Amino acid sequence: MDSSVLTDLDKAITELRGLRSTGAVFGLLDVDDEFFVVVRPTPGGVDLLLSDAGAALDYDVAADVLDLLRVDPPDPDDEELWPEGDLGLLADLGMPEPELRLVVGEDELYPDEQLRMIAQRCGFVDEFDKVAEPLLA
Image (tube, rainbow, N blue to C red; front, side):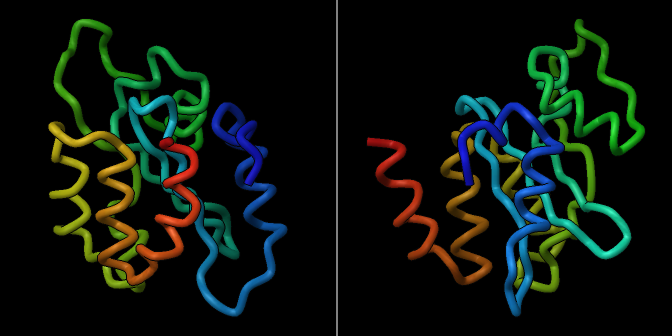
């Protein structure tokens, strides 16, 4: 996917909808090593997970996620990190909600490390590494 999808949620959703696949289609977006978004188009809309709701105070793409989820942004004085969205959106791929909640809660990890854990649990870590390693170099 083009890097512009990191700043435009509608673009990410449109690009993912345009992919043809026999399996599940979803996107893992690591935004500035600050937070991540999981985007999974569905026949009736889109399932979303924002790893840190507080990111909506500084990033338009995170604010757009909260808008689609119909969730108000957090208070700017609140320093607690919490996810918003569907923590069960990857359950059918091997990442049940309780495990995804643990991964998202690992605030000592960078988003790319959290996404790698998700990729490993869902069985596509080799493909993830092929894409992520050049970006991290």
